[in-house]
Amino acid sequence: MNPGQKRSTLNKNEFVDAIDSLFLKLELAYHYQFYKVFGTDQRLNEGKKLWASSLKKFDATTILSSAETVVDNQPYLPTLTDVIRACNDILSLDGFPSVEEAYIEARKSFSPRASYNWSHPVVYFSGKKVGWNLLDERDSKELFNAFSRTYIKMKDLAIKGEKFILPSEESKESDLKPLDQKLLEKLRKKHNI
Image 1: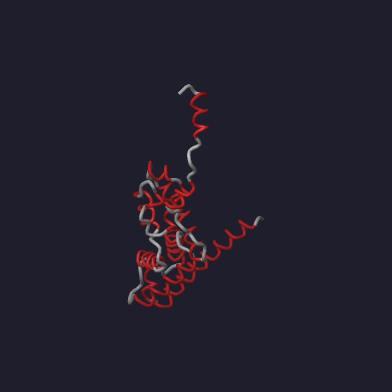
Image 2: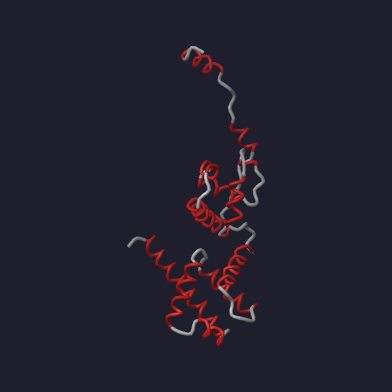
């Protein structure tokens, strides 16, 4: 087994543990309401599958934090929508736009992209990695998912301290070299222009 597979398995196990922990916290905090909704093993397992499917875009830490948030703030058993909202709120506290906002911003941007007024440089670099032509030409679920994966990876890198600096117009101008007149004449003769 290569290291990538181990990590994937580790993330899956962390995710499953986070879902189990979420349900345990909900059970302890909302005992009677919890059993009214998830009273049988079959309903509990189906509930966990549904919630896991809906929460799969969040990491284990975010899910655990959302569990604490909803338990602290909700007098009644929270719905799946409440937990998703709490996860999104937790992710938005880091100063980055949400994945949806970043995707819309990348699609609405225009050339020259480097001089566009980006909400965060990570949005620019995510769009660049996915491909500006794809973002300009089509809108699909697959494209959004590709952008989402790229954005989340780059956002994690930024949180861990990697610097994302937008290319400036001045650096582009300094990269320009003066026109080589001899080469131009040579090419004109070669192509009869």
